[in-house]
Each structure stands twice: as C-alpha cells, then as structure tokens.
Length: 392
Image 1 (tube, rainbow, N blue to C red):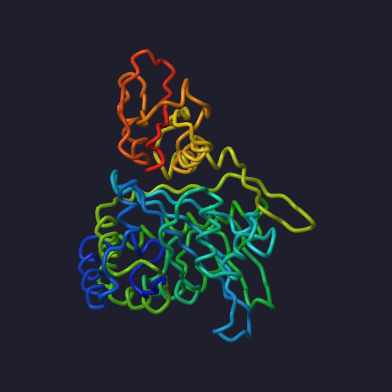
Image 2: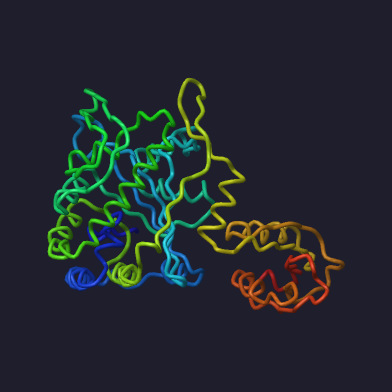
C-alpha cells in the first residue's frame, strides 16, 4: 500500500530549500517524522541504477465549488514531470499541458487533467507513464491554498507580466485582473498569473508562463534573506502537500538537490498542437517528437541504435526485448531472426570503440557476452538472444 507523508517537497521548494542551511532544517524535520515505514524502498534503488528518478508534480485546482472535502474531485491544473539525473547532477522538467488528449480506463478520451479527478494521483502517474513510455517513481500534489501561502511566506514573487490578464469565472470563483509590467505578485495574484488560460497561442503559452514563474520563484528562494523563512515554509508545505516519497528517501533526494545550481535545471514542454475534436479543445501530442524528446531528457541514451536478433528459437522474445529497449530510450532499428537458433548465451556486439553502448544495453540483460564488432561501421549495436534469455 502506498504511504502518504505530508513532508517537505513542492515545486521549486524541493530544489531551492535544500541548499545550504535549508538541508539542515529538512533533515531535522524529516528525522522527527521517521517511522518503521521510512526505510529506503526498492523503487529508489532501482531508479538509481538507471540514473534517473522521475517525480510527477500535480498542482490541483479548486475542485467543485460547494462540494464537501471528502468527495471533492480535484483536477490537475498543473502537471510537470521532474527527472532527476543522479549521476550528472541535473534536473529536466517536462510540462504536460492540461488539455493533452489521452484515454482514461472506463472513461474513453479525456483531457489528461481529469486523471486526478477519476483516479487520484495513482491514475495520473499511470497515464503519464503510458503517455511518455517512461517510469514515474513518485508523485507530489499541492493545492492552490498551499501555493498562495508559500508565495506570501516568501514575500511575493518578482516577475514581468507581458500582457493584460483579465478573466472572470463566477461559477468557479476565479477572478483574474493583472496588468502588464514588472511587479511583485502576492499569493492571490500569483494564483491568477499561473491559472490564466486565455492566450491566443493556447495552453502552450500558459505552460510557458508557469515555467517562467517557477524560475522566478527559484530566484526568490535562493536569496540569502529567505533562509530565515524556511521553518515557516516547511510548516506550510506539511499542511498542503501530499507525496508517496518516504521521509528517509526525501532526505536522500534533498541531499542531491543541495548540490544543484540554477543552471542545472532545464525546462521543456510536451511537443504537440491544439485541435478541436467534437467541439472540445484538446492538445494533441506529436508522437515522434515526443519520443525524441523523451529519449533525450529521461534516458540520455543519445540515440543509441540497436538491432535485436532471435538466436534462441523461443517465439516472440526478440519483440519483447525490443519493446523493453524502446521503453528505456534506445532506438531499435531491426527485429529479426539470427542466422541460427543454436545460441546458448545472449551476446551483445557493439560498434568499434563504443563499449559504452554494451554497458547501457547490458543493464536489461542477464550477464550477456560483450564483444566488439571491429567491422561494424554503422554505429549500431546488435543483440543476439540466446537460450539463456528465458532466465532474464
């Protein structure tokens, strides 16, 4: 069963408040909440082997006005997947537009922000994982009340607004009234800024605005004067944030974040275009561009090309391994039978002077034989599956 901990993590707070003395407060706070369930789990250990930990951030909307809290159905107004590169000490953040068209189990085609309403964070994690074909190891949810309190506790966020923002939604109790110019946004105005949707460019412009706000928040949090505000910020986060990251793992991730610099965090947006279908406005992902971007920011395989040959005689194993390779970011260029089905041990033939290819591929195989193919000038690694693949 997944564990819920109201602990220290939310958007840029995770990255910025872990710097310097912020780590001390984080560490002290988490240790005070440790229990027998707080030991490091296998999810983080497995993620560390592959070099990346992926955390889905869900910023929740106000829900249904007037509904009781127990039965309220919140949607995700903001959805970002943070990929922490533990080896190279970098973070990539992929923003997913809330109007992205996906299939939800039992509901058919829906906007991706509805996943939270229909199945909570577990369904949101599952849908994002299938959309991107990447593992999502943890989630974090934060509501707008917490968001506003965080901004106010910081002392406001300094940002330049490039257009007039005016919108009223009486039914949703949302009123936006912001003028262009360089200004400091308090919690209420910050909520208006990140929730404004009426851009001529559509939802993509809203995503860019949210990314701009995150960078401005990071800059504010890194100011020395804000160090003294950390205890109050931690208290606010505890009251308004939910995550399935255990306290002891959070300390480990906070230690990673402590080593980051501003330039180590890069932001991206899911490639796609806006489109009306059945009178409903959707964001349609461009599959090839999505695949290319995912390979670059979640796997760092640099487009390693692989041919998979079945030398085991077992039906379907080459396709299974090819699918697994693709899910890890490799580019599979060929799936076929080998010259015979008499191979006992799986072998990886890597291009000349490219042993790193074999090293990456061997992570998903059970002790394969690694051989350099000196005659290979195509920059393609070849896997010949042997009968031992059944033990993989």
